[in-house]
Amino acid sequence: MSKLSHLNDRGEAHMVDVSDKAVTSRTARAEGFVAMAAETLALVESGTAKKGDVLATARIAGIMAAKHTHTLIPLCHPLAITKATVEFTPSQTPPGIHIAAEVKVAGQTGVEMEALTAVSIAALTIYDMLKAADKAMVIRDIRLLEKTGGRSGTYRATPTEG
Image: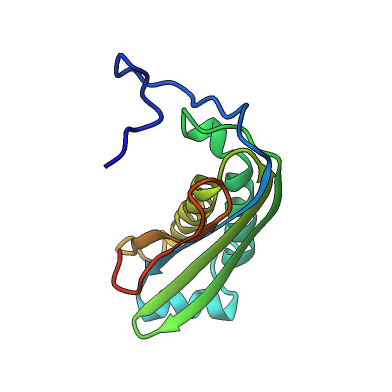
């Protein structure tokens, strides 16, 4: 494993200096899943959840989270995000909702954490919106699917990772 860039020569955490890096187009995609009872999924699909439109609320929460990642994760740089999307795909088997996020930036550092944060907060929002109906929901399988741009190039997860 290479040296961790968030540690200085004394092993102390610090924000990485990216001032000498070139501005490049960078993209990251992440995914996750909220497993739930079939009856809970039916509330989402029928639009009858007590708190309102679950997926619309979770989509906005995920996008907002991507934009605020640097305030949540101590060593992340604030980024001028150029695109953030959060999409949902209901699943009957197993019952639940698949979450996919994509974040783009033209910058000096990547947006992997922003995509992962978007998925995480969207999943937590789904849980919050439905917890009165199903406290046994499970948030799982949050992972980076792909990242492009920057010095390290492209990464694509294999189906067996995660």
